[in-house]
Picture (spheres, helix red, strand yellow):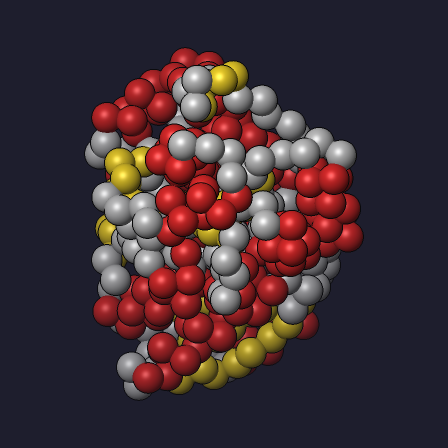
Length: 339
């Protein structure tokens, strides 16, 4: 709720609250929500999970929001046998070889492959420069999956540069990328760094298009980057135009009436985290960690807010990847690419 990923956490929390309002009871009893702020920090995330389990005696956990913090808390919930579902963490390691960990978002190996496919087929890129925030597991992992797939298609990575979360000056990295003459810059980083990159590219007269990942899909991208982010593409977890289910329509209507803004990906997936968990609890018939886990793992064709859910291997949902372009400060739907 605070720290570098606060915008994401706040949107997810809005979505969880709307879902709770639409389904306030589970197994005939009022469902209680307990919110802890991890401050976008791994140590705080681990402490929060421990407190939820030991002090608050929770039956399940929705969270964390970003991959690094989720990875910090997952082993603690795993040892305690507490089911946990991250709405938006996309690093494959979050659920890999875990019994109790799930996610509502797609996984980064799929996102990276789809990004490479979009770059090659739709943007016709053949030479790509990559800019990676090496402080974030999400950014490093997504970049690696993109690079492997793009090279497999015959593409060339002409430059690889690194930044750290919180960096303000990217001029050295931009100079190196510009000298390599890429067709495209792939920068799968979070929204603040993406926005600053776009502004500095504009200031330095670099017009190479930028493709990024779902970590850019927050209003703050435009608030920070202004007109400089126009033309940026990103692979996304959801777009309002993608609502196809009855639950999705009810959720979108309630969310938009409550918050007086259009439903976004992080809120939608926050809702899905709650609804998936509630459905599994109802199916299990008891607040038993093992029974809830088995029910979650068996999820098939669940009509969620962001579409139909079927849990695949390693508790990763099988679903399409949306591609969005920023046009005149708006997130404009481009296409959905299915696995």
